[in-house]
Length: 255
Image (cartoon, rainbow, N blue to C red; front, side):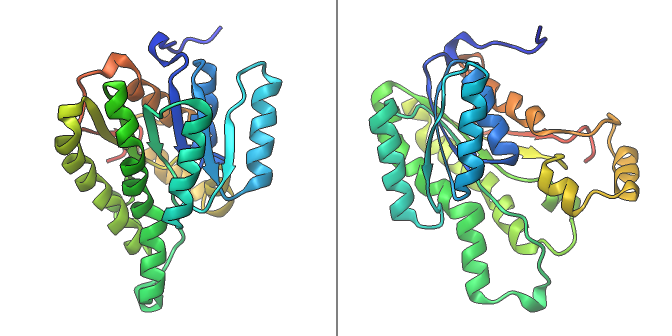
């Protein structure tokens, strides 16, 4: 039996997750399905997304609705959001998760690379919020959770463009929390630490890096996607109904 919370207010709530096909996003999708939410998600990786839908159905949970979409294409993304809303109902919980943390040296960054990375890691969040706000207003409120990153606090090497985008997420979150608060739309951000996704383990986790990480964290245990998903569940549930304009760090006390 799970020792984690069940949120009655999340049952039948319409939730949209970007980048939901793998990693942290896939865990977010599955956790909302476990709560009985009506979940839609977008991703570029069609095979991984289809496999996730089948895995969730195989557990006897309500299947999420997947739409293949490149979130860098604002028009296409907003169209996909409209299709998901038409199928499931107005989105009242939005999780802006999609991102990519490719390493880059300053000498190699071009204007085109800068623009593409900002589109991947920041711009889509703003325009997704713009798309769901009318429905949230009609519903009497909603919750937006924007994913930032601890990387700019930790000053991880060769990530400056990514870090610029993820730092900007916090400023955007606070500004929109003020703008939308009168409509009872809450906007918060979450800053994950080093989360052990398949990508992170494959590309960067070495025995030496893990040992160093455990020394840095107050809680000497690796973090996994579920640890982020459970934070986001609370932020989208009525239990956090007067929490907005805040940033929540989930990193085991590393920073």
